[in-house]
Image 1 (cartoon, rainbow, N blue to C red):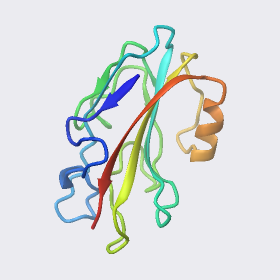
Image 2 (spheres, rainbow, N blue to C red):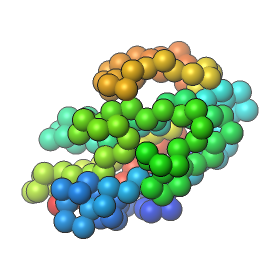
Image 3 (cartoon, one colour):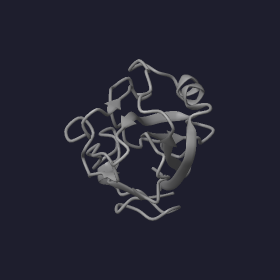
Image 4 (spheres, rainbow, N blue to C red):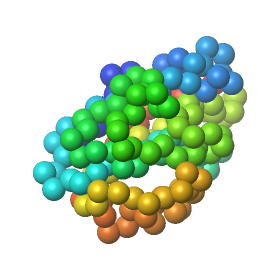
Length: 156
């Protein structure tokens, strides 16, 4: 399975328009993502964007669950507006539902934003909107049949 973004290449910078509004020029537009080669037995997808930088301490930027198995991507700016039917966005660490773009502290160096797609063997995950990263990961245990990752970098 493979996931890519038309906004950045793996290991390369994320453009500022996708950053949180706290960043000069940040428009908080959710990233365009597309994926391919999912297992034919996929019943749904889950998606996370997490910043594992030591300063960020696994800051959650986006959780999406219950993406239908025929889904092959999310368009730019889809969060809160054009999400696939049946999918569910959860709270990010900013305390809002949906996508929250990069906003690393000034001077903390480059931060990796790990976009991970999980192909699941279940059609639905029953998680509350205020799910923590630990709870999200626990809910995926034994359900992931494939995963793919692309990492963007952002620095202030």
